[in-house]
Image (cartoon, rainbow, N blue to C red; front, side, top):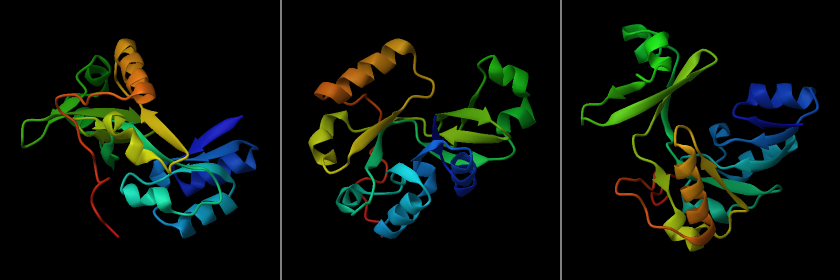
Length: 178
C-alpha cells in the first residue's frame, strides 16, 4: 500500500502502518538537507515545495525528486471555510464553491478533514517548457476540478509538449527565493 504524506505527522503515521511513503510538496522540501531528512524518515520519493524554483532540479537527493508541473496550486489552507461561514456547506457541495478576490478572480475552494484549501484561479502550467524540467525525476500533475476531457488533454500535452492556456502561472519557478 502507498501513502502520499503532506506533513510530518502523516508521514510518521503512514510509516507506522507499513505504507510505502511518497513525500508531497506540502512537506516544503527546499534543500538537500530536507530531502535527506525526509528520505531518512522513509519517503521513497519527494515532490519539492511549491516555493522551489528551477534550481531545485540540481539539488542532490538520496531518493527521486519531483516537481508539481500542473495544477491549481493552493494559495492558502484555512480552518474556517469562507463558504461554510457565509452560505453553508450544502450550497458549497452543490457547486457554489468559489469566492471572488479584490481583482475579481474566482478562487475555488476544496474542503476536506476540517480544513479548506483556497486555490489559485489560474493553473500552474509547464507543458510548453518540458526541456527546462530535465533534472527532476518525475512530474506531478495536480487535477482538482477539471472535467475528464480536460485531464486527458493536459495529460497528452505533458507527453508531447503543449501550448499554455490563455490564463496561467509559472508560480515561483523563475524567482530566486533562497
